[in-house]
Amino acid sequence: MTIETVGVVGAGQMGNGIAHVFALSGFGVILTDVAPESLDKALTTITRNLDRQVSREKITAEQKDAALARIRTTLDIAELGQTDLVIEAATERESVKQSIFDSLLPHLKPETILATNTSSISITRLASRTDRPEKFIGVHFMNPVPVMQLVELIRGIATDEATYNELIGVIETLGKTPASAEDFPAFIVNRILIPMINEAVYTLYEGVGNVRSIDMAMKLGANHPMGPLELADFIGLDTCLAIMNVLHDGLADTKYRPCPLLTKYVEAGWLGRKAGRGFYDYR
Ligand code: CAA
Image (cartoon, rainbow, N blue to C red; front, side, top):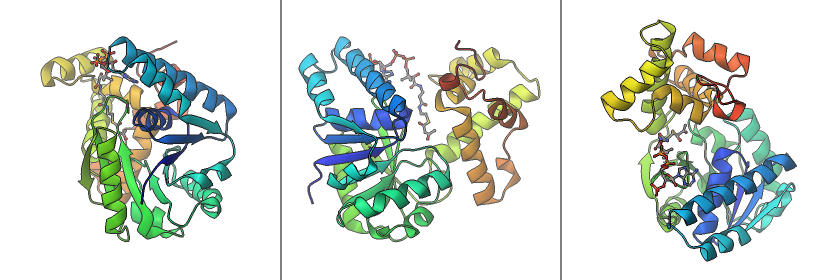
């Protein structure tokens, strides 16, 4: 099949980045969300990030205008009936994803591939509750999507070979590199990255270092582009906690227990950059 139009569900930081890279690579994009202000904010962010690429001479002004012209936003999920591939990029909560699939599936063409950008939840379980487990796949982009090279590709137990091969081609068309991961909690990147971030929060909790010294240690001592606490704020502390819970529940090993300080920050609504406050203050 030829994928020409892609639906993206969820206009948050992952959804707007996914819409950005698909539109820039020539796909038509229909971006949907339940909140009109999220769609407006997504278009502002995409425009700003495309401008950044123009100013760094990565793309031309004409490419930017063409990409923006390919993105349509809508509050009506039924409009995704016109798409060949849908990528769900909503909040990392299984119940939210489930209700999106319930309202989306009646509108989709039978041949449309349904993908989820989940960063940790079982693809097999999500797929089993849809009408197309063989055309269901995990496509996990990294943040910031326009910059990061890797996309994890995760097959559920029923995903067919044609769907997998189609997505390999799509990811390569985006100029990105696919990495296959088996369907186990948090796949590869987050199985390794999020426990490291959780350990950094324990390091803070136990007073081994303060926020700045922990981040500086990992930037200068391990050559990470961002310190782990800065990165946690960037990813979102709620997302980090949700992934730790998936690891803890799914692998039943106490080494994955979320740090109580991480839980406390999430309970306070200190979710990182998007909330204006996390380990750092952005206000
Ligand atoms: N859109 C487009 N381009 C962007 C961008 C965005 N949102 N953010 C940064 N860029 C571009 C810049 O234009 C710049 O491009 P050039 O190098 O071509 O000039 C480049 O990225 C570097 O940006 P800056 O110079 O502004 O800033 P920086 O050097 O500090 O890099 C960073 C910023 C790329 C975010 C870097 O700090 C980094 O790589 N951080 C780690 C990111 C990371 O680990 N991501 C994975 C998170 S885990 C995840 O996503 C999985 C999950 O499920 C939780």
